[in-house]
Length: 371
Image (cartoon, rainbow, N blue to C red; front, side):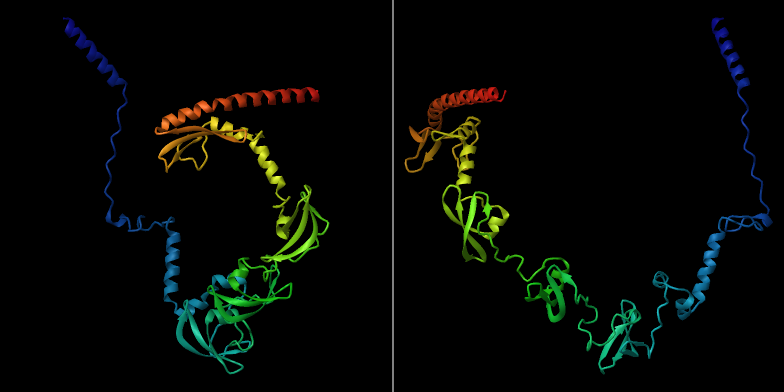
């Protein structure tokens, strides 16, 4: 009885849910289209205009009309892009057409970049072959009898490149470029390829790289005072100078101008000593570097103060302190030499402790004086 009641309750629930659900609409059957109303290939029914493809139809009609035109009519049908940009219609080239001193005689039948090549007669009697585009532009006006620049070459006559002024082209070709005769502001003439001028590689005849002599007598450069001119060496002017330390030296003019040389060499030695922190011949900087296990570039043993004696086939241990080198012995085993070196470094540690204490006292005294 229990099972039947459960099933009956389930069936009752199903019936209620089915009553609540809306009935689904069945898809309507497609009606057959009669033959007189079938769609045409363009997608619309017969007799109905298709506005979506009206533009494509107009394009096709224009294209068909253009195809029907002859090649000559196509050229004259409308202005080209170049004509639109310039605003002028380019002249039609034919026999008898004149450009300055040139007159077109006949078409050769050859083509250059798609343009007809014409044989032209110059006023001097010479001949030259030019294409339609060159004649339309009017870039060439003779066969070369009057103009210095040949057809197709760039004309830079009168233009300045640094201290150089271009005069005329020569018959030479260097680095696939025409060589030009130029004059420098200093008066010298030089032949330079066009490529080097336009790229800025050459700006003078060479006078910029070798500056003229200047009057430096009495002037100071760092610790140096110029006293007299010492002549010329290796293309550079030399000057005699006196350093503040009293020594005399000879320095090049370019090195004085650039500031590379400021003393006779005493300034560099002072800076070197300051960086090394030398005290009684001992460098605190080198001791600190060895303490941090930093090695010199020439070290081959991997330990400071230990090297291999090839003649005796032994390892040598030594240490330098206050300008003196102490021999710590020679050993067959490398580890024994390293131990000897570490024992000798105890004097370095005592020295560094003393140095740090002195520097601390100096800093505290300086701080008190500032207050």
